[in-house]
Length: 217
Image (cartoon, rainbow, N blue to C red; front, side, top):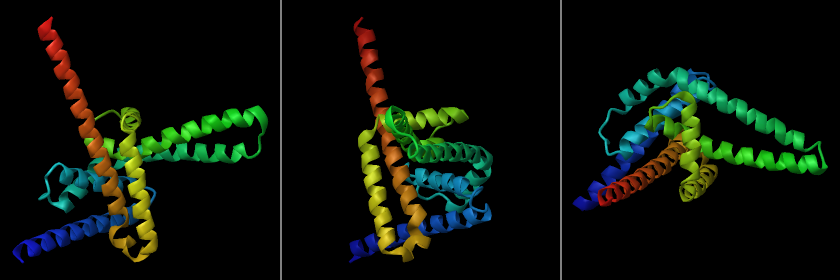
């Protein structure tokens, strides 16, 4: 009974934590009139999740969240504007494909699907990369794409997990105000964090192999 009570307590505690982060996300997004609030709120949420995944589960959620919100408000909104513009270009070109034919349509379609592939992968990883690394603005975009491309299984599992979560939220829409964004955000940060660790392990193996070769020479 003690073991069951402990498991139940920890489960309810994590449920409350996710709901609390979700509430902070909704409030700060609304205060930013959505357009100016959604990206900083998402980055602040992922900052909290990254701390949890790194083992720092006893942090002050509110202080960590608000600290990230104040620090990154302008910079992440610039990233958001960049992706909004790129998304609009893809949207415009999609409709343009409907009015052209022949070879031009084929060439434009290949370019459009390639652009969509790059855009989706980069978008999935851009904000986890932002909270995990300290880079220049445009380096975040390049790094996000590279991390996604070298971890295809992580991308696949992430897309499946998000699809299942969205389906659950669709079936039970009443839980969206309590867990919607936080569940999706946690899945994205979790998959990205696994990808970062996998890249670090590969880098360490390469460095150890190079060091061994240097000693032999």
